Image (cartoon, rainbow, N blue to C red; front, side, top):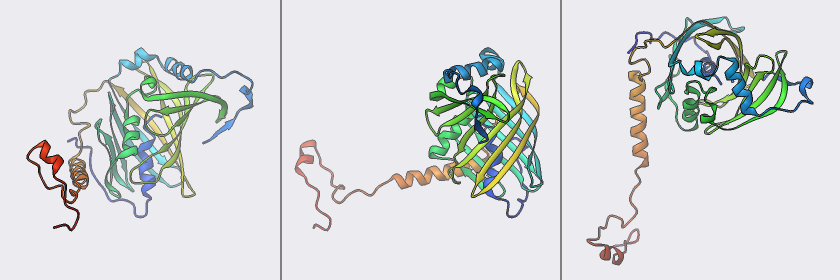
Length: 311
């Protein structure tokens, strides 16, 4: 495996929900939005055309499709908490990703998806493997260039309003995935760029967390515009937390290690144990009398199982 995986002591008392927040901002796709009277009387465009305009303004479908993988690195800060760290994000077609976060107070935090299994690991939580709706949402979020090929992933897209987001007049577009909860995206009417996403982060191990991610500082890399600043805001149990992510370096079509997206050994073991438990729990005891075996189909019709307790 790659040598950028490690561990360090976690800061005592640091909330697990805050740790899980660290990785959710990287899945493009996250309120702060207010009704905007500027465009109240204007006819609303088709939601799909708003997304297509965003793709065109960001460089176009052809430019995005030339990119096979992406590596971005930078730093982040928990606002008002004095916590800072670095992050590295790896993504590849069709739906693989790996996130590596280092913080002096928390140690190493990792999250990944190999296209089938979505997992998370930190010194505080240990290994967590997603299942059910949370797994479906993670696979959805891991899809490479989901905005470019939005028709593959969403069954309904609707532009519902014009609102103000941090001083920008934006189209509010509600996207309903083929699996999972709806997302609300906000596109700047002037630049056509995506400036905010509101969604609920799902986890098999934590309560659903409403999350807003503000995207800014778009810069062109290999012909496509990518946000280099992300502000993630969540509120859980009456506590509001804000994390600022800054991207300093982005590279495309990188020669990645062949095992970059492989499951770490402890994650693979957890998956194996979970699968064993699932198989065991799915085995049901045979009902009374079902152990009788007829020698032929005609005998099977004639033989009736004895009732429970019958001799």
